[in-house]
Amino acid sequence: MNTPHANGNTYPAPAMAWTTVIILSLTYMFSYMDRQILVLLVEPIKHDLHITDTQVSLLTGFAFALVYAVMGIPMGRAADLKVRKHVIIFGVTIWSVLTIYCGLARNFTQLFLARMGVGFGEAALTPTAYSMVADLFPPEKLGRAMSVFVLGGVAAGAALSLLLGGFIIGWVDSIGAITVPMVGELKAWQLVLIIVGALSLMMVIPLSLIKEPKRHGDTTSAKTDMPFKAVLQYLWDKKRFYGSYIVGISLINLYGYGAGAWLPSYFIRVHEWDASSAGINLGLLYLVPAVLGGLASGWLSDRLYSRGYSTAPLMIITVAAGLSILVVPAIIYIPLMEIRLTALVLANLLMVMLAVLLPTVIQMGTPNRIRAQASAVYLLIGNLIGIGFGPTAIALITDYVFKDDMAVGHAIAIVGVSCFSAGTLILLTAIKPFRQQQAQLQAGV
Image 1 (cartoon, rainbow, N blue to C red):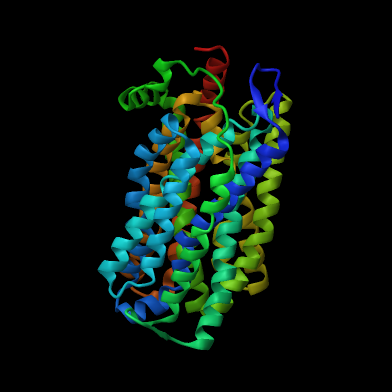
Image 2: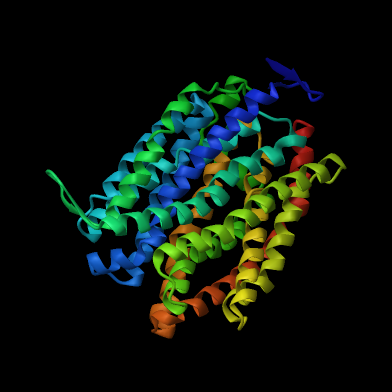
């Protein structure tokens, strides 16, 4: 059953729409788990494969990000032209199988190549899901819907990759290495990767049952077959909005992915937490503020939008980024651990508040038939910088500026303050062009 809307479009019934969002969100959760689980396995991987922090950062960052970012373009174009759920199912299958293969890797090169394969598969999900969610709900409800979807990754996925990772590591450590016929001995970190890859592969079943939502807006053949070169030209013509927004968000991503990769190691090295405790504690400190912040951010965005503040999602993103300039250093430099962890909770709250609204801005400011491709370009730049250079930036400062593994906290603080300061200033310049872009789309220009 479909529900007509005042803008002339017909949207799916709420039950069907929210069911689809929840399935997509769970898929995002598993993708994030497969992507981030490596951060809890840094020390055993370093020990078994005899690699450095910089090489680890390539595994957690660049190996994944390079393919993930680049392949988002053809995946986004496929999503704009083909059945979107089929694109997602294809991606889930690829990244799950390659995560399992990560658990079978015997050296740095094999693990590096397998991580590239994980990036290839995961590139299919986000731009495609963004486009689907935008066709499930009217604009005044899009903030909440998108926040629920994104929560599956940045909140549930990140937290559960720590929580479940911590529990699985503890369990696997208790049974030790095992020997598998035709494979040989598998260490604890390898078993963890095989388990999370197998779990994510199961999402193919519910994904095959969801319905493809009707696309809204102009669906003429001219729009449908718009060459990618023309898409890039459109984004370039609107560079005052897209350029400022993408650059600002890319800087924030650089800190977010960098800190996500190295905060567990900071607590393990500097405060002598073990990997299992680090995963469980950091997961708990992330999950509650992330869920509260994500849902509150989507609700506030929709409420402000309904009251006439068309730039509400971008305004919330900018304010949260500005406040983070003060909060991030407190995680490292406040003397008392209790206050330090409170600052971490607040930082998680702010980071998720802005993160869940990132795709909403792109969807609200982009014509329907190029939404997935515009999202793919945004993800290409944002993730290449964020995932590709975030972990490496912190590792390089640790290895070559401080030349001390115990200085990883200082590196996190330096990158955080720099990225949030520059990112906030750039995002401020995107607010006016965003408002103008929305007005032009509503006028059919």
